[in-house]
Length: 295
Image (cartoon, rainbow, N blue to C red; front, side, top):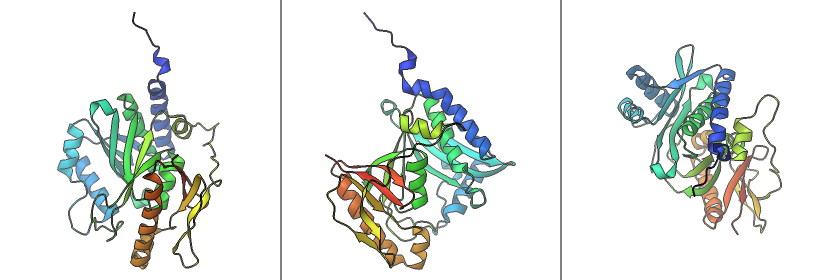
C-alpha cells in the first residue's frame, strides 16, 4: 500500500515561495531589478562587466558573450542586476547531473560603483529562489580562501559550509584580483533549505541573523606584528584560522608575503579538512574561519 506524504514535510517545497519573496525584498532594498539575461546586448554587457572587475592580463574574457549565450540557452542560470537600466551585477551558474539536484555557481560580480549596497546578496537570493523553484536543493561555488570579504559573505551572511580545499584549482589566472599566485579555492556548499540558511536569507525586518558562538574557537593561525601568518599548536576541537585583512592589496604591495599567507592557510585548512573537518562559519571580528575538527 503506497503512503502519501504531504508536500509540507519537504523543506525544499516549504522554502520555495518564501525564497522568492526574500529575493524580491532583497532586490528592492538594494535598489536593483534582477532578471534573466536573454539577449545579445545583455551578454555583451555581462562580458564587459566581468572583465572590468577582474581585468584579465591575457586580454581574453573570463566569460565570453557566446559562452553566456550557450549557458542561457541551456536554461541554466544567467541573471543580471540592473539599476536605471544599467547592468551593475551578474551571476552565472549551471545545473549538475539530474540526480544530484544541484547547481554550480561559476561566477558572480558587482561593479565598483554598486558595491556596499547588498547587490551581490540580492543576486544570490535570486539564484537560490530560481534553484528551489527547479527543485534543486544545493548550490556550490569556489572562492579564494584568502579574500576576507568573500569569506564573510559566504559563511556569515549566506550560511554556507565547506569541507573541501582545492589546491591550485584553476592553475595560473593572471588577472588583477588573483595576481600571479596559485589559485587555491574552497568549495562552498549552500544547503538552500537548511535552517541556518533559511534564518539568514528569509529573515524579515522583525528578525535578525542568528549569532553563533563565533569566538569560542582556539586560534590556530593568526597575524603577527609584521603582518605575517603565525601558527599555534592546539588540541581544541573548534579552531579559528585567520586570513589577512586585504589579500588583494597585499599581493600588489608584497607578493612574497601574499604567497606566504597562501601557503600557511593551505597547510592549516588541508590538514583539518582532509581528516573530516569542516568550516562552519566565519568570525568577522577576528577575520577567522571557524573550523570544527573531524572525529
